[in-house]
Image (cartoon, one colour):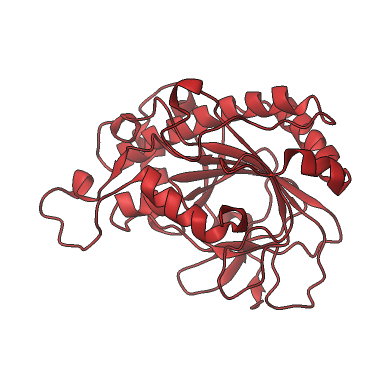
Length: 315
């Protein structure tokens, strides 16, 4: 656990995306998204339109779930489709660290027509002992997915592309939502993290964090920065697939969580990904003159490989 630099919030860009959310092609906002993604790869967004009452209710329901006895949570233990409860120690994002201290509860878009085309399809597993979680979780997934959709429009505009460039194969996305719970941990083991240093697998991550703190982002110099919670904002970060798609122009930045606050911490996450057959190829943006060695891949194949490595239940 190297020394963490406590920075002022304005050292991580803050961008108001309210114009994008109304469907505008706001070039100035797109330029801001473009610049932030080329530098730190992390930003705060405001003007996203997510219902704060919904967020509060989902947060409280999440705490009710994670505070329940293990025997109850086992009733929705994670499926091979990555839906349900992942207990502490069942994920490992950093090969050099211990398994992550966190717990997660995951759900996704349900569509019976496409459930056979990728392992990330499947039925959600809703806990009977928190009955409101199904309604709240589905509502949040729908709203957050719209935010991701408009952010992808903004990124395309910032790259000088047609605004629907990243959205041409999004009719059956692989996006997932999750509640992620971090109990308080003592800073006694340098290899134990709430979640170890990692980059995110997919295209784009939206994070609604509470006021406890603990998220740390690594800058280009290897310095760890505290991503201080900002009321009403979302933390947005570029994932590996979007970085690959842009030939590394957009940065997929290492980050981690250490919750030594003395309080429990809960985050609400959307991992946005398009259809599994979506081809992620830098040449589609840069053109035939691309001189790099990044191969084309599909979204579905890449996620399959990364999940098999990171999650013990897959084995």
